[in-house]
Image (cartoon, rainbow, N blue to C red; front, side, top):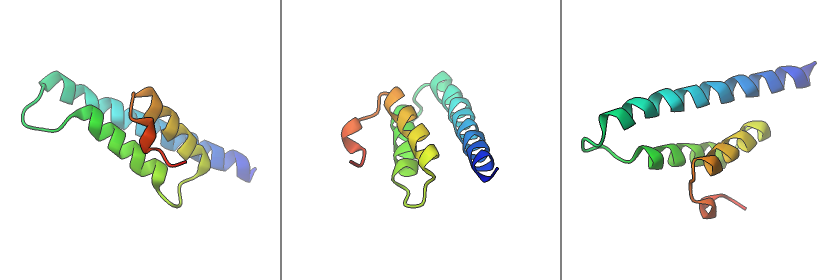
Amino acid sequence: MKRIRTFTAAVALAMVMAGGLTLGVAPAEAGGKKGGGNAQEAICAYLLQVITYEYVNPLIKQTATQLYLSYGCDPSKLPS
């Protein structure tokens, strides 16, 4: 039962992160560059912070790593 709760919490967090990234990127791409940074770099940096966080859940780390690679971020920055 505990495993199901942990998995459900991890899936819910991954969905919230993906939704937030999706909603956060859409206006940035629509508005173009107005002196701000690159949205792609911001996503990669955020996901890298999640991946390298010391106390991250293994499932969340795996999901963040998959997102990191699917967004085309630099795989050489991932911890080995």
